[in-house]
Length: 375
Image (cartoon, rainbow, N blue to C red; front, side, top):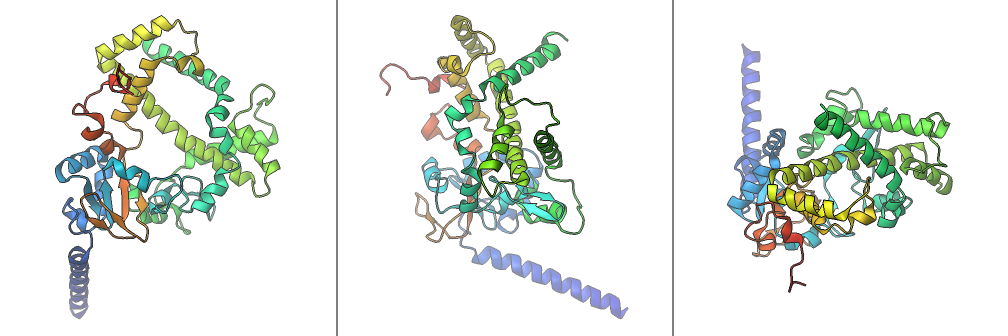
């Protein structure tokens, strides 16, 4: 009986301690004047379950419609929507460092955990990783890969014809990623990016060993260029090559697929847009696959792509940054303390009526076209 009493007292004490801690956080937080969901003021579990629900981008859009340009999503997290803050929070090089949100994109191999261009929180590490390969991602550099893109487009259209013509969560609480996936003892949850990592390792080693039947004489791809860097740069090893290849697959698969689906969806959903686009394509007398140079002349297609990515951005969460030592003063005078996690959700910013007009919620490619008298 005495043991039960002790357990009861211990549980009561822990509960009192937890409640006291939450109340202290609530009443002493510099962010208490930033509106948001009630439970988000106490714990990140609110946004964890919101993301788990699958439509956090819509939740956050509704919250900004209700509360304005600043919404509190966690005890130390604020979502912002003022487009004027984009250059402040997301400069090419700046003081707003990335938060732990990105660390879930680290890759674990054995007992070692590797950061990459996307997951690193260090500007210096990011610059070092990017420098050897940066030229391959410039417009001119990407044109070298156009024959490979043409081959992919041909495969894609073939599959479409065969099929239809001829019948996050953990990032909201980053510590969970370490506990579930990257702890040094035993993985509890599923491997974060196991399939991508394994495929990257297999392709890289096969290419290095000459067993993948790829000929660089025909057309060099990204992997060929990455392997060349091993010969040119002292610190580049096989793990680095695999890391670069993983990033291409992480960043280039879902985002590209989401964008293509959004374009097709909105065009088919709007008969007027479909008709105008079809007229432009028919008049252009294009050969297949369409070259990048030819596509640049299709102004209405360009407008459709811009509008589809505005209406359905590939990223549906705030890209988090940490407020630097000087803090952040909002346009209405409210002050965000240093160390606060802030971010802007494209799904919210892209609906700003002061930028895109009163019809911001509608799909209207014409908003991207230059009309007579406009500059």
